[in-house]
Image (cartoon, rainbow, N blue to C red; front, side, top):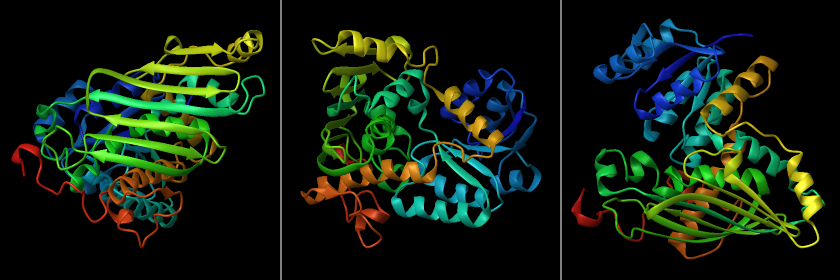
Length: 368
């Protein structure tokens, strides 16, 4: 089996998570180069993962290396610029979420991918666990019936200390609050399972955290197939959970976890009279594959070996980013937003906060 050579750009906490995910692939990939402007952090990461080729500038890495995949593990405000630089040289890029601060930035990445010959994928690892694959296969299966309603909650807790990192909690550097930076994983999975969304009505608020961005958003999302979902993204919740519930005509499918899931995190409850059919349908699914970076990395390498676009593509990512933008647009305008409404003429195309959040730029507690 081919061993893929990986370069890691950015050596903060998520880079270590990714490195561990690569290690789990048992030699299918190895980190050959690493870059970070912080030399102390760079050295610590490179020493831990035995990487000898170390750079403090991305361009220097690009001048000297030809990795199979470049993993962008930098803060969100750097993603567009760095992705464009890599793609313009024909590299394959795998970028942590959110891949861009806005739909406009994502479009710029797409243009660079098209013109430079590289490929771009976003890390949305919840799609790749066995339970998600089983659930997606059963959407539309007569044994479960039509999807009718869903719940998608990301209820996490982040205190003010979390936002002491200068780029967090700011529209210009993080792109948004829990809608963009936390709940996006869970509602990406929701969209992947239920298909295209049609309309959203939402509210967002800065309730308690010392941020410029929201710390809570709540949305009602209607899908093309008629299903209706509630989506809550919170950084205010002491009992943390990530919860997804899909109610079909003949069964309820639930997933509860925090940051990753395995088979035991899924439950299926048949409606009366449908026990045998529903239980049998779920039993046909994939087991033994937890979600996580390793699962997506394996899918990316499979795609590259076959010549297919690595998942999750820009087109797939855009649907999720558009829902995030629509949640903000509906929240700040007080009006429903339909898929396709947010084009280049909309202020929410270039910034997730549009012309500005209704609570203004001054954070609670006075932090500038």
